[in-house]
Length: 105
Length: 236
Image (cartoon, rainbow over all chains, first blue to last red):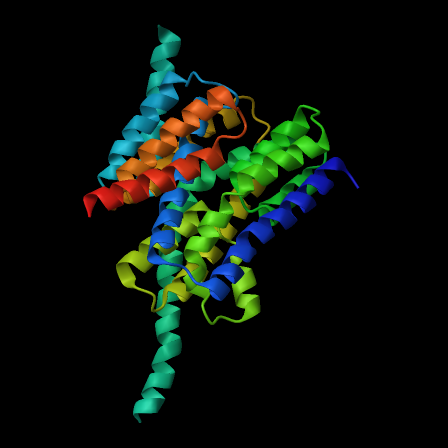
């Protein structure tokens, strides 16, 4: 069995446990409104943190300016209620434009 | 007569909710496709592409799949890849706990199947559906959204695995990842305490990247929960 198989199976099993056990636990002990709100904030916090880490890139603290511009524009458009597909297209266009401009400078 | 009508309208209502879930997931599938292709490129570059591809189902999370393949691609030890994957996937406990009421009274197999597809997009769609449409039909809506997302996500990874060895392609397509994520987080900013929660998570993630790289997510989640609840309390 290759190392890739071992990692996929172990992390896959852990992932299923992370997904299933809280549902079983909440069914048994219930969920107060305050806890539900806290979980909601934590979930959005995880998504926001993943976005920031994706902007920064692996192991870096200096974001690519083109990515930064694209995400700033995408964030604004998402705030205005644009759909995901339209935000990705608009942000991708901004990324391409800034990448070309930076390459020409 | 009434009972017959009720009995026949229940499945059609569930079908309508299921189809609504499929439709809700389509923009996510389109938006996430470049991310899937990026993951597919990493799958193609793996030492065992088929095993790496099965991560599309086993892990069902692009960030974790990409991260573990990156660790393995740099000849990192197996236990490091496992630790990285587990740490990234630990966030799923929060989504799962938050969506637990969705499966109240459901059969165990339905709960297990639904739980296996909990990830940012399905969580964001389910949260939105529960908030705007209430609990009635929310489970069928979730099932439709999860089915559509699974088909689209797997297809994108497969395409990426087949054509992903184009130099520079993955680098450029990866801009779609933060774009998709900001779309998912945007609705939360309009909720009480939402801005405080997101701001705290962003700040904590940046600080954690500098101080404890690789361990950013869990502190960011804790900071978001604390700041969001505090802002809610001050507001009320």
